Length: 72
Image (tube, rainbow, N blue to C red; front, side, top):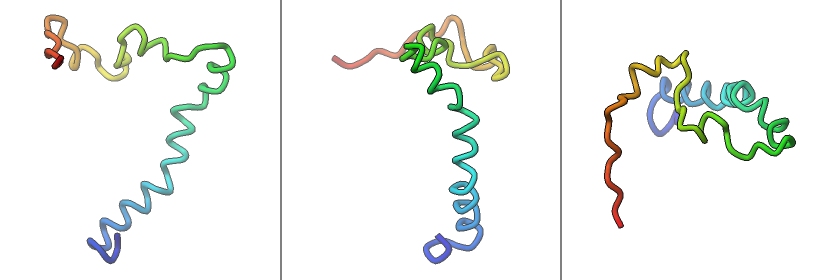
């Protein structure tokens, strides 16, 4: 990226590549144990809870929103 774009873009991507494994560990460290217990689907995802309280769900989820029609 240093040569294609500029130095700043290259540094941003290098930082992202170096820090992603640590972020992934933070997100998924419970996954192996959950799989061993037979939990194949995230319980929050299965219930439709896409956001936690920390994510300010009331700002993102509109109770009266209508799902967009799907083709077919």
